[in-house]
Length: 379
Ligand SMILES: CC1=C(CCC(=O)O)c2cc3nc(cc4[nH]c(cc5[nH]c(cc1n2)c(C)c5CCC(=O)O)c(CCC(=O)O)c4C)C(CCC(=O)O)=C3C
Ligand SMILES: [Fe+2]
Image 1: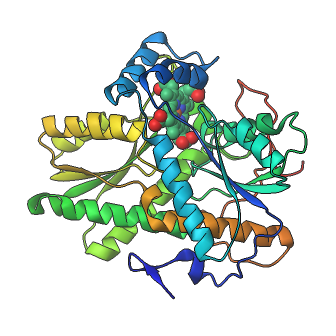
Image 2 (image 1 turned 180 degrees about the vertical axis):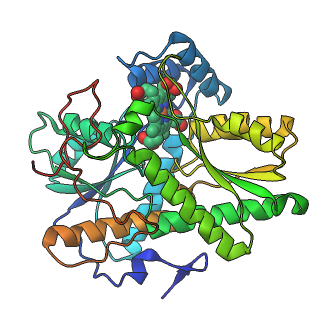
């Protein structure tokens, strides 16, 4: 058995036979981002069409992109992820085409589906670069998949792979990133350091409606479960109990609409007052270092910490860990086995358990939108 960073590759440790039937392709589904200054405004228009985002907020976010030359890191990171997934597939002896499509920028999902259809792809598994439940992070992607195939002759059937916030590979990658950041803190800041887990804020109502209609607040519950699991593992590895909290970044929307709080910067201020010696900022809500991470955390939150004279390290996101790409292939093989009716291990960590393969009817429904979706369980 080979090892990656000292941990068994999840692909090899499952002992699954590498059979991808009934799938003949994998589709990487992501958000998309601008690549040059001229892209910024049309990109923001794509993201916010009909969303009631105040003009000032859009101008502010546009400035974040401008600071980085109009180029979000997200597309390049997805290109890296595609290469890593292709490498994992070939390591597993699998010859499966991998396509890529975004919600908001080129390459668009619609183009990906048209290519797949032209190439004769019949059924594809979809890996979304978002690990949690909520309208923004799950259902909206399923709406995008519906639109992408709508009216495309011979479009493939699409299955969205399950949520992976609690998948052992995602948990291990995030845990090791937190441990590495603790080690990178000055020694006298380390023992009293707090773990600050960060995710994208969403409206409180969107959180309340995340998950099936009869449950409440899956988005927050999933993050809390992962944060607790990582914290527990960090204690096991270091022998030190670090206090932890889940906080938020990138709040948008009109000020009168409540979004999840506290904001990461406010939280850092209260930690500094309460005598924390240092912080690790762990962006568990994000799969890779896209704009929210490089601007809202690396630029803004680290600046706040500097002003507060609070030693801080930002933990790496899971996406570049080799175990992440291996997880994608493992989820594909797992789902393929499920679809063939073959018993298969569905590994998970923490207290929630492995998530469903098809979202329950009306899962993460947004009152703003009655858009049809794909990848829902039959009523
Ligand atoms: C939960 C969540 C994720 C994580 C899950 C996932 O990854 O999907 C996420 C990811 C991302 N969000 C991104 C960018 C933006 N999100 C915006 C706006 C919004 N995000 C929301 C939520 C989320 N967003 C919400 C509720 C809004 C309000 C408008 C609406 O109700 O839809 C806006 C408009 C300006 C603003 O309002 O801030 C921008 C530019 C990028 C690309 C970054 C890059 O370019 O590197 C990525 C990966
Ligand atoms: Fe967003």
